[in-house]
Image (cartoon, rainbow, N blue to C red; front, side, top):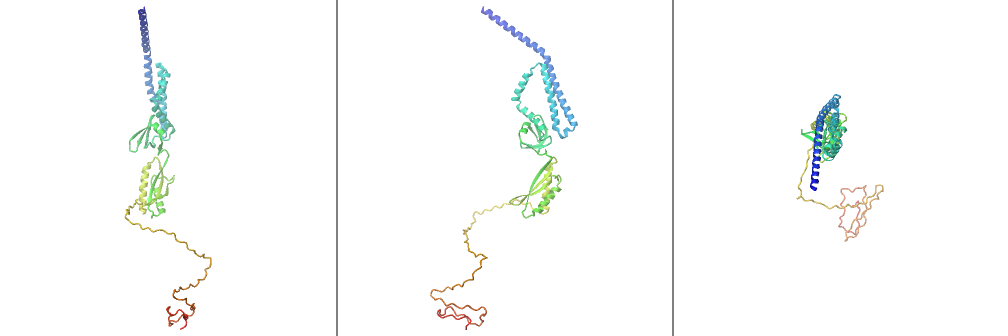
Length: 361
C-alpha cells in the first residue's frame, strides 16, 4: 500500500513539473516578439535622442548662445538627450511586460552603491554648468593644476594645462574643492616689486615707473595703475608696481614686457637695482676691549635767574714752618708799574718783616 502511494505522489510531481515547463516555454514564445520589439525601440530611442541633442545644440548656436554661453548649449542638448532616452526606455519596458517597480528598486540600489560616484559627478557637472562660476575657455587653478577649460562633460571636466598636457578632473572634485579662476573677471591686476638703492632719488624713480606703466602696451588706463613705496630692505627700498590688464588678453606676456621696460628705463636714468650683498667676518680671534660704565655724578648748577655773588678772595696756603704773612695792599690798576721797576722781593725774605708795596722803590 505504501509503495502504491509513493508511486502516485511521484507521478503527480512529474506531471506538475511538466505542466510548469510547458507554461514557461509558452510564455517565452509569447513574449519573444514583445522583447524584440522592446529592444528595437531602445535602439531607436538612443538614435533619436542623439539626433534631438544635435538639433537643440544647433538651434541654440543659431541664436548666439554658443559664443557667450556655451555651457547653456551643452546643458540644453544634454537635457533633450536624457529626456528622450528615459521616455523611450520606459515605453520599451512596458511593451516587454517588465514591472517598472522592480527596475526602480534596482536602480535605487545601484545609486546607493555602485553608481554613487557616477551620479555624484553627473549632478556636480549640472551644478557647474548652471552656476557658471567658470565657463569653457576660462583659465582656472584646481587642486594645484592650472589650465584652460576645454570641455565640461557629464562626468568630468577637461583642462588643457600650461605645458600642453590634457588633465581630466572629476566634476565632484571641482565641486568640492577651491577653484581659482583667472579669467572670469574682465580685468586682472599684475604686480611687480622692484628694489632700488637708498642713494637714488625716490621721487625720480616713482616718476620713471609710472611713465613706464603708461607706455607699456596692454596696461589699461582704467582701472588706473599704481606705484607705491614698499618695505625697507637690507640693501634697498622696495617699490611696488600694480597694473591692470585684460584677463583674457595674455596677461603673462604683458607682465613680462612690463618687467623688461622697467629695467631698461631705470638703468637708462641711473636708478640702481642693487645686488644682494652679505659680508662674512671671522673675528673669533679678535680681542674685545671693554670698559666699565660709571654713572656720572650730578653737579649743582646755579640757576641763571639767580645773581651770582662776587668771588671772595682765597687765602694763600702757608707752609707749616712759616707764619702767616700780613695782608698785602692790592696794586692799583690805574698806575701800572714801570718797566725799570725792581723785581718783587723773593719769597725767601724774612716772614716777620712787612712787605713793601709794589709802587715803592
